[in-house]
Length: 63
Image 1 (cartoon, rainbow, N blue to C red):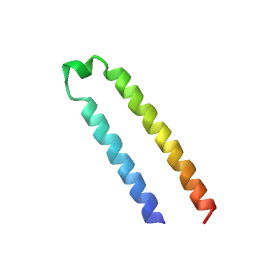
Image 2 (cartoon, rainbow, N blue to C red):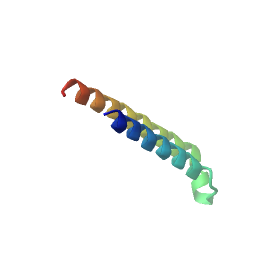
Image 3 (cartoon, rainbow, N blue to C red):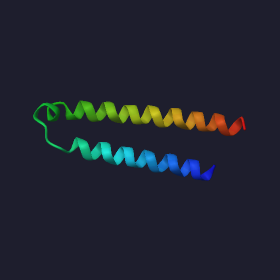
């Protein structure tokens, strides 16, 4: 089970790093709304993290 949690954390960190590295690239159409896109991606990550923690907590308590 520790391996599964570690694997989830590693995947999450890689996803955040890769997303942030992509937002730094210049694209004329994208750079005009980078702030909004970054805010949306951050909100998505927060929601997914919270849902994952709730799911993990539910899984642990129902084993």
